[in-house]
Amino acid sequence: TATTETRKFEAEVAQVLHLVTHSLYSHKEIFLRELISNASDACDKLRFESIAKPELLSGDAELHIDVSWDPDARTVTVRDNGVGMNRDEVIANIGTIASSGTKRFLEAMSSEQKTDARLIGQFGVGFYSAFVVADRVTVLSRRADQPAGEGVKWESDGKGDYSLEQVELAERGSAVILHLKADEDEFLKPWTLKSLITRYSDHVAFPIRMPKEVDGKPGEEWETTNAASALWTKPKSEISDEDYQSFYKALGHDFNDALAWTHNRVEGSQSFTTLLYLPAQPPFDLMMGGRDERKGLKLYIKRVFIMDAAEELLPNYLRFVRGVVDADDLPLNVSREILQQNRQLERIKAACVKRVLDLIEKLARDEPEKFTTFYKAFGNTLKEGIAEDHANRERIAKLLRFASTKGEGNAQTVSLDDYIGRMALGQDTLWYITADSHAAAIGSPQLEAFKAKGIEVLLMSDRIDEWMLGSLNEYAGKKLKNVAKGELPLDEADKKQQEEASKAAEPLLKKLKDLLGDRVSDVRVSPRLTDSPSCLALSDYEMAPHLARLMREAGH
Ligand code: ADP
Ligand code: MG
Image 1 (spheres, rainbow, N blue to C red):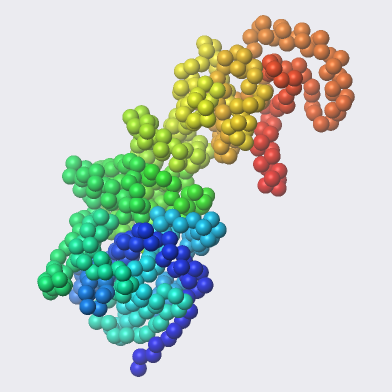
Image 2 (cartoon, rainbow, N blue to C red):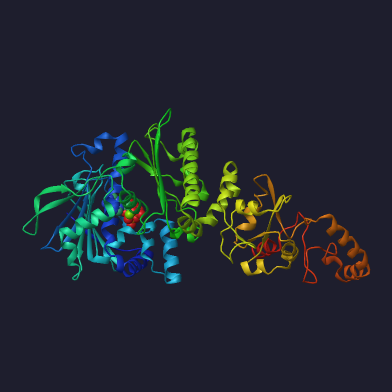
């Protein structure tokens, strides 16, 4: 006998439901993309599980996704013959918020009253987007390894609770049935559904089928509506920019076009394909400084999706990259643990890094506008590479851009090579100043002597700069130095003048030293200043003042 049980959503789910349904309203059509993406994930999972247990596919080996509509019942159904869910999985996956990413999403959304629909898909709250257009959602699901009697029926109006029932389901996989709200009739038009599939899901790797229309109703015959190809396996010459962009949007859950991409096939003792994208804007997680939500780089082995493997395939400082890596020679039963110490994977990772840096270099050289967009979004993330990636330090440093006393206002446009190109004959040091803000940097008395001598100084005021500079002492064989530290570049005439000035000021210096006591290690006549009467200077090994302040704030 079937019993129906009613359960309450976890408190956070109710909150997410509320937020999603309200914030997504202007992009409500993405529910279809999200449900198709879940169906595609479910097919990926089954294909993966069937490597070890081929019997899971028995009798129904063609994985596919069906989208259908019913004008009389006013429903839209997305069905897949993928892995399905058992009762516990239904409760865990769509009754609870398991991922920490979703929790952070929730905090951010409620604290800042932010309603940016772009972010929703990135946080695994995709399923709930169904409630933007539906006032009731039914899920019928049967896990691939369970008998027909072990089907689950889940149903909810998306308010506070849901019902669960054990049902008989002849086929494995899941069906998500949307009972449309009164004013959402447009989604009952097959043309609308079809165009949404083309727009958002054309490159889903499984066939998405729709019934052919007969007299305004779904007929018996089904047709495939998407390209259903693994885009990255095609030759570049057969892929249009639009193809690349729509693949990116589905992959990155992004509404916006990608900024640039690089698609490569490596043949040889180890063959693999990489298709890597630079987004135009930082994903939500990156803005929040998050590190553990690392989706967006998918590892395939011979077209079989294995796992999200951004962490294994990219260094942290390139975590904004989205894409696909398809390796021919890795064992299909590879686990995350094995991946972490796999030598082949090390080589693929190095290749990914090289491709991404090549791509960014190409933008810097050929497409300055795009490079500026990139740098605004990800420049500070890239800087982490100076400390993280010794092997590529010089390449990364070449890509950095700074404000400068010879640049334009506070725009970060001056490269280290620009600086070197403007150096006076005999100058062997690149000078910089670090400060809390651009205004503090440009207004610092430390710059006076450099201005007077016409020496360019890079103005660094991003939080990460001081930390990065700890790993960047040299570039192109030249030293990088903080203007507040150590000896200044003096010529003979300067030195003589300074000696004379020091001698003349001796009584004053003594008095100041007595007066300041322990608070200073020395008081000197300095060539640093031309207008201001005094400034604080550091020895080579002291911390910059604003870093010292940051450390104090952090409780060190
Ligand atoms: P995400 O896809 O980012 O994990 P969603 O909210 O879209 O987040 O889905 C939540 C979870 O529900 C999925 O991770 C998956 O475990 C489960 N799920 C959703 N749809 C399906 C489906 N069609 N088949 C199997 N599992 C599903
Ligand atoms: Mg999803």
